[in-house]
Image (cartoon, rainbow, N blue to C red; front, side, top):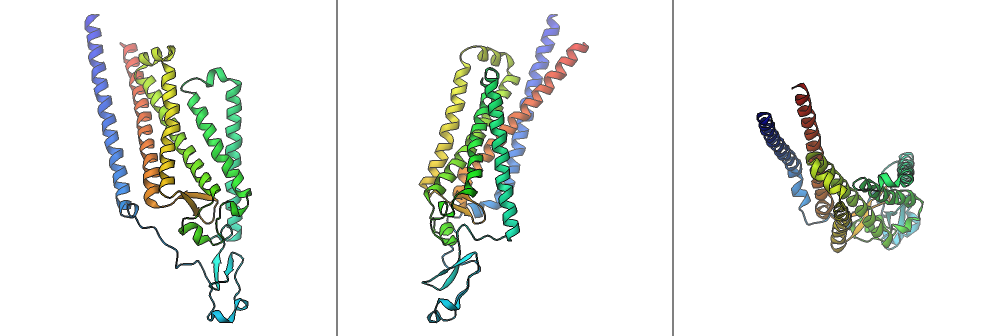
Length: 316
C-alpha cells in the first residue's frame, strides 16, 4: 500500500510538472503570435501625428469665382454650403460613404442587434433574480455584473439612433468634428460609458476564468475558501478591480484629449488617436483575452488529466 501511494504521488508530481511545462509553452506560442501580428503595425501605432483634415474635404464642390455668389453652387443632400468659402462641406450626422439603402440597412441592423441584446440581458437578469440564492453567489454573480454592464451598452445602442443629430455633432461640418477634436458632452459620455463597460466586462470575465482555474487545479483549497467567509474577499477584489481599472483607462483617455466622433456613418464616439487607442484599449483587451484563454485551456487540460488519472486508478 505504501509503495502504491508513493508511486501515485510520484506520478502526480510528474503530471503537475508536465502540466506547467505545457502551459508555459502555450504562453510562449501565444505571445510570439501576438508579437508577430502587432510588429508590422507598430510604426503606424507609435506615430504621434494625427491625420489632419484641415485642407481636405470629401467630394467638395467649389465655385470658380467667389464673386459670382452662392446662387451658382448647388450642394447635394449630404452637404451644406459654407457661405464664407462658398464650399460644399459634408454635414455631420447626414453624410455617409454608403448608398441610402445600405445606410438604412446598417441602421436597422444596428438597432435590431442592440434590442436583441437588451431583451436577452434583461431576460437573463430577471431569471437570475428569481433564483437569486443560486446565481448571486461568487463566482456566478460575476456573470450577473457582466450582464448589467452589457445592458448599459445596449441601451446606448438603442437610444443613439433615436436622438437628434446635434447630440453627437458640435459643428455642422463633419470634418471639424472628426479632425479638429471637437466633441459634445454627450459624445464624451457615450465614448466613456461604452469603453468603461466593455473593459469592466472583460475584467470580470478574467476573474471568472481565474476562479474556475483555481477550483479545478486546487479543488481542496477552493472548497475550504468557499465554505468559509474568506470567499467574500475574492468577491470584493473582483468587484473593486472591475470598477477601478477601467476608470484608470477612461481617465487617461480624457486627459489625452477625450473622445471624438470616430465614424461618420455611425453614431459612435471613439478614441482620438491610434496611439491612445492602442495603449488604452487594444493592448489591455489583448492581454486580458490571452490570460483568460490560457486559464481556460489550462483548466480543460487539468480536467482531462484528472479524468485520465481516475480511469487509470479504476482499471488498476
